[in-house]
Image (cartoon, rainbow, N blue to C red; front, side, top):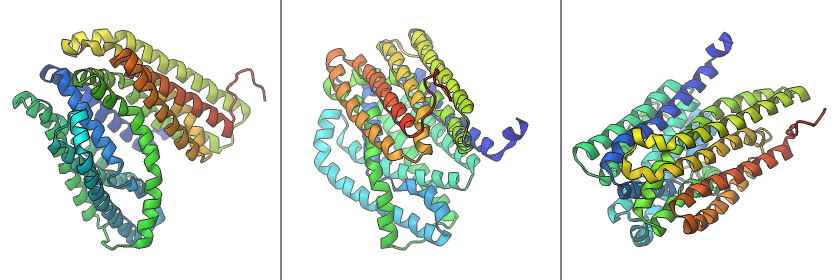
Length: 423
């Protein structure tokens, strides 16, 4: 056991996991302050803006940053440098095209989603900045520098939090304070990232048609997968703000953020479970070993559902200690979202089998289909039940996604899920 703990991979995994938990915990810890200085409508506008930035982010850079870790090991340093420069050229070109599209969509965005004109264009700057930062973080992962990765990520999260508190609490800037803090943090750390990339002399400024086409072939097919993720986590807020209003969206986003505690837990565990499971499967486990994996998985299912139930029961009391009274209607949202992310944790457990047999296209297809289904369910339940309907849609669609992936995982890598099965 001591040898495992000292292993470099274990230490790296722990650093990445701890970084992820800290980063996601910081916005949660800000809630007691922000809910006292911001109104539900302010939170609604912020939620709409964050959703817009994440949507635009799918088209600025066209997901080509995902090829960094692949090309880092596959190509020579010279060719890798050319790839990086071409990826930044793609970022520049796609950002200009997105700007052109935003020019025509801007009236719709400002009227339906309550985002002022100037901030629509600023959202594009933020998305482009995040792309550069992601490239730098991907390089640190490829170079096996978890400490640099962790320090950078935490510093960025703390900078965003501190600037947010100063602008909102001290200068009383309201939702604009949060927007401004996001811009400052995104641009500042993208410039730091660019400096780190240049310092390591990775860049080789040269246009290469073959590399450009190959990079686009990698990134563009990932857009539907990214869109599926956005539909599942962002579209409900846009439905709420356009159908009910900013205040309802703000209340929902606060409840969602607390329910996301479940998401932090399952995501962190998945980073450890994935490598462990792949190692087990690579040794061609016996029926009894597979049975042990199944029993552990069922135990995990019960555990995450139990934690979600506990979070749901405790949610009314959280508001007495942490959250301003104006947001008390967010309490029912917490339980539904917690159960939704419990299903996400269960999906992670069974989805790894599809990764192992390299059937990820089924994973992407299932994710996109269930995301479209989520959009339909969200719209219908918001019409019927208002704000709580969006949270109910999260639980239902995430649950369906888990069941579909479980079926596909067992189809391509059968496991003794029925405990009465014998070898």
